[in-house]
Length: 376
Length: 207
Image 1: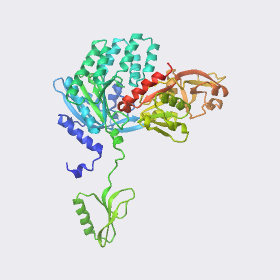
Image 2: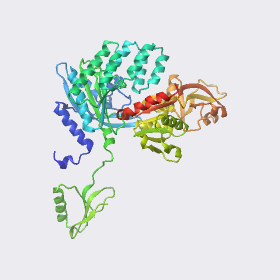
Image 3: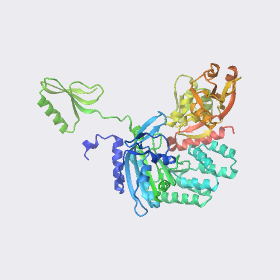
């Protein structure tokens, strides 16, 4: 694409294009889905959604449809992948979610990537690697936070923690509220040794290898060890490919829904106060749809990038030609077309528009084109 | 430079005292003028003086890296931030209060005046009690006196204000104290500084 065309794109649009090219290069196909989804899908799988607020409406046949609050659920439902035939694709879709602060719905633009099938560690590596490359494309100043839900599930299983307390614990862990967690566990008469283990696990956060070592010290069962082995293997591959430098292992990263089951990760870029990328393993979601498959993927919240590039605004238009009523129309149009051929953006108008900026302003009257100077 | 959101007022003074004890002094704070941003480049810290109920918002949206805020505000706003420490200062409780001679009519919908609608809703939902919330922004104690509400849900520190208005605590909902919170993204980028602050604060906090 030549410069005159890419030049009009905003930074976030350019990034979207660059990322699409990146994903295509790795053999991922673009997948386009319908705007609506049957409301029932979200009703039956509400544990997989962060928020229960969904925009619904009636179809002509009376059935209830929803504007998608989430893309992955639709993908899990519709995938044609099998154990011997995997699917790799990416999507660019809008989802509709409640914005807590304003109390109204927001349209959120998501660019996501999914790998579904019978997956191995190389698959996890590939997706994490692409997630890392995605962050790099957005900003040089980025961080990836990685964790493993299996580590927590096995630990909680091993300690025989009840379902209700489990949710509370994970909520404390997510907020790094260790002081409150300690008090709550004691109140619930959890054994001191178990309290110690849970607090240690919740505080595991830091450089990848060092944190892995510390985590290994509190692995009390096979499940925890397997989770750490998987993290070690994937990290090893990333390190080998030279893109693990800005990754931290942080076991306080736990999903706030039942969505993810294995490795999970979040990406941050400096200047955006929330994660711009979230992803992980969600095979359990596919099992819910009766598909014994693995799946791993991530989504980038393109809206958040507006925050990063705000203030860069639109460039001024190159030229404004203010013409008078008695100007020679043929000569005027020819002069403007000449300038456009040189690659300039040229606007014709009778009066100077108030809310627009121009590099140069010209007048065109019965004497022809005359430069009136640079715009103030 | 670390941006710290401090709640204006007495709690903010106490928090600043803690922070200066661990090496984050900022001389400008004693000048007592009306500036809202006070900076100490030599100590690498910038204090933002904000309304207590806004601290969590400054932190959640990343305008401040860390902040100190009462648990009451965190419970009501439920911001998506890390809550790293209980500073054990600004201790009080969130409580239900009513007139000294108040007797609850269990048959009627309870009218509750409060600044904390979300905590209030959650608390009464857990009791399966139907309520009507009257959201006020200050002088909550007036509501039961004027018959605007049956009870109030508010912060109680010494209980003096209640007493002077012929009100009493009926039920404690939750104890409250000041918490150190951090923005999730900035925690990643300023991890060293924030971790050090947490460690140093733990040393100076009364256990």
